[in-house]
Length: 180
Image (cartoon, rainbow, N blue to C red; front, top):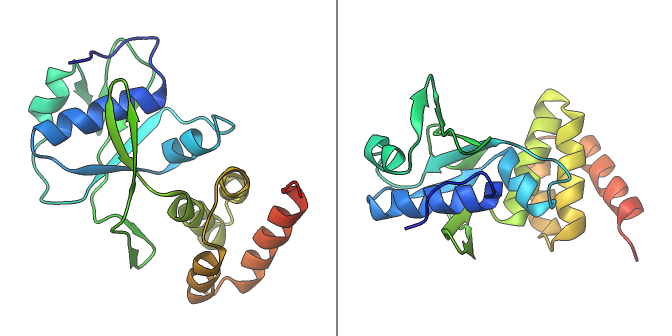
């Protein structure tokens, strides 16, 4: 089994945590800003690894301590990495829409389950739509530029969120920044 080291990337630490939790019978998916970091090749780097349970919530203490993480408030920290782990409550959702299908990426340290690019874009757009978070808009564009996303699904979801004007801005900005 791998151990956490200073040289590990956020994706590698996340894969190690995800795989260790899986061995302990705990299914999680990586969500939030760290997914943007992975899909944007660290254009937007996050040190917060948010894992949301996809099944029955179980205690993570023994798995996290096995890896050398210690509880610090609501976070888990490890002396060998700048990344910290948090476990927001589930279910995995973007607004009212539950997410049930995920991407898997395999690293030398384990397999990571994370939001797919389309849902990552939707997650970032949700912060822009509901809280005027301009960085969320920029993050959504960065991911959509680098990865195939289901634009029709994003548009349908955004219209359900009553965010037509902000959706139009996203689509226009995406068109103007995508190389043709």
